[in-house]
Image (cartoon, rainbow, N blue to C red):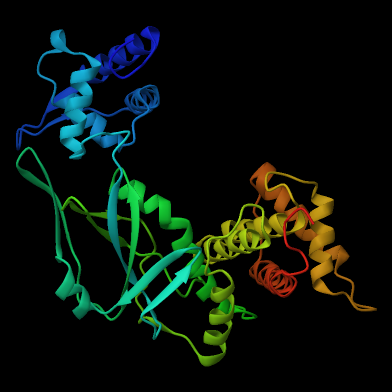
Amino acid sequence: MNPIGMKRADEEQALQLIKNIFEKKAISKTDSFIGIQYNPLTILENKVLKSLLRLQCKETHIIQSIASIEDLSTLNLASFEASLKDITQSESLRDKLTNWKIIIPFEIILKKRHVSVNGLDFKILSYSKIKAEYPLEFNRFYKGKLVATSKIENRQCKYLVVESTGYSLYRAWKAIEPTYNLLRGLLDYAILYNTWKILSMPQVRTKIPHAQTVYGISSVSQIGFLDFHVQKLSRKPSEINPEAKQKFEKYSEVLRKKHKKNSINELLSDIIRLYNQALEEDKLYYGFLKFWQIAERIAITNPYGTSNDTIKKRILFFTQPTPGFDLTTYVDDLSKKRNELVHRGIDEIEENDFNILKSICEVAIEWLFFNRRVIKTINH
């Protein structure tokens, strides 16, 4: 057994993968920067190596560590891990958790100092507060060279500040990202409830777009940032009207504490997060499938599969059919369109299919919310 507790066969495979990747080493002619020539096989080898070593770091860190190797004859896994520790600026890749304060631009005017969702407390600060309390420049250096930089700008928006722990900023972010999306979902649901929109071109429908960049400050004085490929919207931060604010306050208060496993609050959190994801899709059919996922989550106790008939029955239950107005045939058509899209890649989803399914899901969310005391767990 080697110093990091691997089987001999796994150790040999890991060392061979490092050597395979090392052979693709290249030096840039312009700035003498040492890197690895990427191809699909390199990506796969990197993935396997990360799994073998059970590493909690970015795959780019592994590439950087391999690129810094000078002599393969002295290579062993202990020295390789030591190199990774140096690059990630962490005392231990598997054991050391770091506390992070994550700063998130927030594109909505919400007159509150903080909001709590699923056990997480999000402070809401102005730019002037951010400027007074935190550094605005975020840089990343490698071998003495600046390779990335970002800056918090003075924008017409507020900033969320939330605490998280992780081996890196990325891991800390992934720990709170579902709750961040739940918060956005609660606001979207409150603002866009019972509204329809017809768009002439692909565009996200969310009122609270995902941040393009988030920033992190750790307990060991590391600073960093994460960029996201999201559709940029040229509009002012959204305002929330009194009716929507009341709905948001009512739902967020119920979902303020961390939900219990298999509780109705966990189910509500899941579907409201999916609601936000559906509105965040610029492709109509992707948004439709997200709303269908909501119907699936509401229809079943097992989140990983059920019959389409069960889902259709639950959708019909929430449409409250009246004599002479039965949606059975139309819901059958929606189900067929969903199946054609998922199993054959044929897109026949129309704007009004999206809007109608959105409205049905909104009614279902409201029904679950008002019946949460009767249906205490998803097994009821």
